[in-house]
Every structure is written in C-alpha cells, then in structure tokens.
Image (cartoon, rainbow, N blue to C red; front, side, top):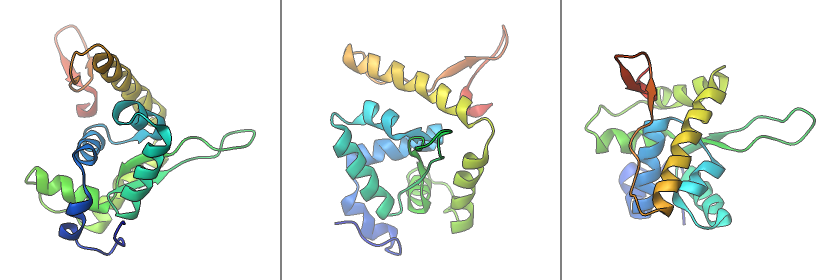
Length: 159
C-alpha cells in the first residue's frame, strides 16, 4: 500500500519496481507522457497501468495534470515526475537533491507551455518507435533525434 506523500524517500524504495524505475527515467528524459503513451510502452493492460500510475502519484513519485476538451469531457492525464520522483532521479544520477519548489516548477511550466502539443507529438514518435522495436524484438530505442540542419542533429530534449 502506498505511503503518504510525507514519507521519506528511503521508505518509498521497497515500493519501486524495475518498471517504475524505467518510467521515472522515461519521464526524466521526456518530461511528460500521457497515460496512453505509458500504457503502450510499459504495460499490457490499460487498467493495470492506470492503477499503478495512481499508486506512484500517491507515493509522490509522479504528478499529473489534464485539461478540459472543447465541447465537453477532458483530455488524457499528462504525467510528469513528482517531488519524490525528482529526488529519486537526482539520487540515481548523482545530481543535487531538488527542493519542493524546484520539483513543482517543471509541472507548472509544462501545463502552461504553449508548445506542450509539440512535446507530446515528439514523445509520441518515441513511443511508436519503442513499441515497434519491442514488437519486432529489436530492443529499446534511444532518445529521439531531430534534424536541426545539414550538419547538426540534437536530441529533441536538448533543444
């Protein structure tokens, strides 16, 4: 059962699976993924994915936001690292531990970013390449590369 958000990071470790670690790394690399994108990359059953994302959010490892759809309803949940997710990734990569304020800024910026659709579309390309590679036994795909000009190519998240 998930611990409350106030639990220390060490108390959360027994609840983190290898798939959770991969998800945290994906969100660290790609900033934001939708429930559907996470489902296609890491889970077989959509409901299992939804339940696990809720558990990880309850642990403070993930944060989420979504917007209303024009004409009613709502868009899918957008998932990012939560405060403990940022702390976990900082520890995993020997980076300084982020403050709560520093951890909250990315989700606030992403939710207000006018280029969020572009980022999600770029991430969708990664998701499709990854699922294709998995279905055809080709392993994991690295960061998505976007052509900048004839002489230079950079991973999209470094632009």
